[in-house]
Picture 1: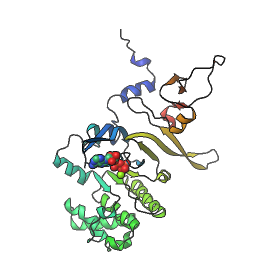
Picture 2: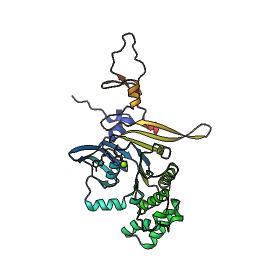
Picture 3: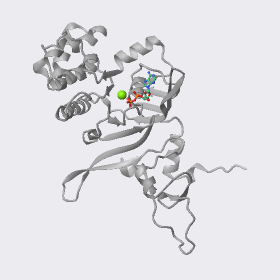
Picture 4: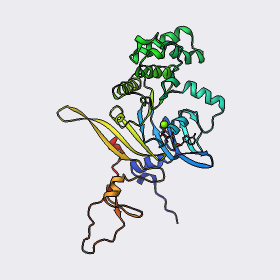
Amino acid sequence: MTTTVDEPTLGTLERRARQRTGTFGEDALIACDSLVRIYQSEGVEVQALQGLDLLVNAGELVAIVGASGSGKSTLLAVLSGLDVPTAGRVRVGDWDLMAMSSRQRVEYRRSMVGFVWQQTARNLVPYLTAAENVMFPMALAGVGRKERAARAVELLAMLGVAYGADRRPGQLSGGEQQRVAIAVGLANRPQVLFADEPTGELDTATSSDVLEAMRTVNRELGTTVVVVTHDAGVSEHVQRTVAIRDGRTSSEVVRTTRTHEDGTEHTVAEEFAVLDRAGRVQLPQEYRETLELVGRVRLALEDSHVSVWPDRPRPAATSAPAPEATVDAAPDEETR
Ligand code: ADP
Ligand code: MG
C-alpha cells in the first residue's frame, strides 16, 4: 500500500528536500556526484576516488585538505578536464565532464578553468618574462596584442608582482613565481581557478602570501577558487575547508563571522561531518576510540539530533544510557 501526502500539508523543509532530490547539486557551479576513479597498475587496482560527493557554489573559495594519497590530485585532474572518472557524474557550469569530446575538452580547459600546479616549472615558461607568460594563453585564445598587455599589467598588479613583469621565472622567488602563475591561470577570465598544492614547495610565510593572493582573486574578480593543500593551516584563510579521506569527502570546517550585541565581530570555525548521498557519515577516530564504537552501533532518532550508541548490553538498572557520541542534525539554515 502506498501513502500519498498532500503537498499543502508538507512543511517548507520537506518541500525543499523533495525539490533537492531532483538533480543533485543543481544550483552549484561544481557538482561531483559519487565520483569513482580506479587506477589499474601492474594488475593491482587502486581506488583513488571512492564515491566522492562535492558541491561548490559560484563565487566560493574552497580549500580541500587531506593526507598524501587521499585522492586530492585525482579529483583536481578530473575537475580540470585532464582525467575522466571511472564512474559517477561531474559537472562544472554547463560542462558535463563525463561526456565531452576532445575538442570540447580543449575548449573547456582554455575558457572555463585556470590551473596552478605545485611545481613552479610546470606553470611558467622559463624563457618568457612574467608578463609574456601571462599574455601567452591569451595569444592562444586569439586576444589582441593591446588587450593582452593591458590585462597582464592589471593581473600582475592585483597579485602584487607588477615589479617583476619583465623578469624571467628564474629571477623571481618561489612565492613570486606562484603569484605570476595565478595571473597566468586567470589570463582568459576563467570562471574557476584550480590550484593543486600551490604552496607545496614554499615556506610558511610565503605560503600565506600565496593563499592571500587566492583570496584577493576570489574577492576582486569573483572567480570561484578551489585550492588543494596538505597544509591544515589553510582553513584560516578560507571560508570553507573540505577534508578528503580515502577518496571521499569526510568533514568540513566552515568559518562564519558573527556580530555580537556590542557590535564586535568575530570568526567562528565549526566542524561538520559530511553526510553522503547514501546517508553515510564518518565518525572521527577519536570518538570511536573513546566510546569503543566498533562494528555494530545503535542509532536513535531524537527530537533534534541522532545519537549513536555502542552495541553493548545495557546495565539492567539504568534506563537512560550514559552520554554517547551524538551526530548533531541542526537545520542547515542556521549555519549558512
Ligand atoms: P593526493 O593528491 O591526495 O596525494 P592522489 O590523487 O595523487 O592523492 O592519489 C590517490 C591514490 O591513487 C594514491 O593511492 C595513488 O598512489 C593512486 N594513484 C594516483 N595516480 C595514479 C596512477 N596514474 N596510477 C596508479 N595509481 C595512481
Ligand atoms: Mg597530490
